[in-house]
Length: 362
Ligand SMILES: [Ca+2]
Ligand SMILES: [Ca+2]
Image (cartoon, rainbow, N blue to C red; front, side):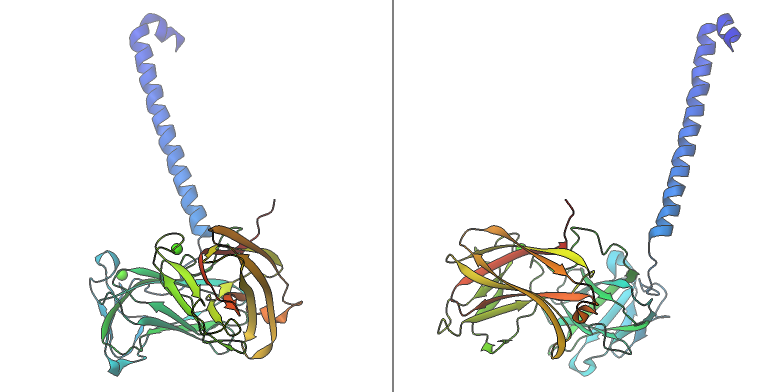
């Protein structure tokens, strides 16, 4: 090679450079290709498969049970694909789109689905999760709107090895609902610090995932609980507002909001964070992390704290140790939910950006 360069230096060098360049390119391509196939292999190995069959409705109802009112429509889905459609009138109340899936026991799962309705504001889409036991929470509601929205539902299987998901409407008005891209995946990242499994934690999705019960122990709720989109709002466009300022007496004043269920890993330290402000100062907000197998039968596990809220917006933090199941059998479902309440106190409190996650190690 040296000789070639000596006899015809310029040409040979350029030829060699060219050759080297080509070799480099081939090497680069090979490396990129093998890196890509390696990543593909890793992804294929790591990604949990979707357990829902015909999740995008492209196989025309082979795996779905479509009760009265439900059909597969060719192009109304996300990105113009086929999807499931419910033409709802009062006559097909509780009529379900359903699929039964085998589960692994003692595992965490996420069910995800996309939905929209023809009306801008209407009833809620209901999800029923039926199993042979009562271990997994059965009912969930998802507020309908005319934009494609993801509905998510997390649960721990325990000893349950089969589940049937059914979606239906039971509202008072006719509507048309579309559903697409339904997936059920085992989740392996339950222990990621900072990852919250709380649904609608910023209240931007209105009341979705939250409920406002009528009673709080022996007290009747006489306050106003709302998803507030006024100037009092803390972040984004909406926040949760508990308002007992118009309650008849301090002694009976009461307003309560419950979150939906949050899957947890036992034996871990958790941090509950939220942003809040009150109309006045020194307003005691009751915060409870709660868990039970059945709401009316012991065992019951909870952590309760009264947090003083003042009239400037700031972040409040509460640390909670979630015990092992053998210490607290009430946590067997590996679920908790959060409660925020004003009790025997007249004021208004806004709450936003609620986060409940495993504590980060320092
Ligand atoms: Ca589709
Ligand atoms: Ca918000």
